[in-house]
Image 1 (tube, rainbow, N blue to C red):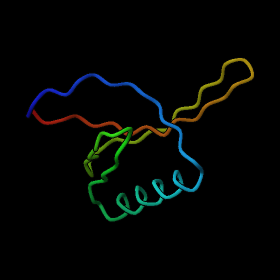
Image 2 (image 1 turned 90 degrees about the vertical axis):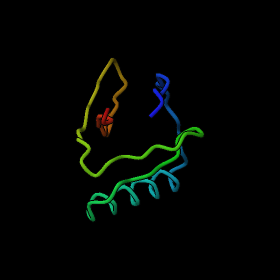
Image 3 (image 1 turned 60 degrees about the vertical axis):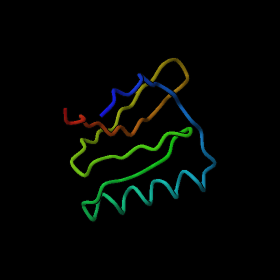
Length: 75
């Protein structure tokens, strides 16, 4: 497998599209399936064994909640 380039981006979605992605993700989690998503033109495949966490940040008058999904590629 070729080494993937480092990537760090943020993409905003309209509410209906975001909800649809969350719904597909929840369905995949519940059924123990891999989740596939395309973000800014790149297809990402999240394995069923990924680790999930929720992060909350506050700075000044801004707050942020991040739903994070982490996994390691096998060598």
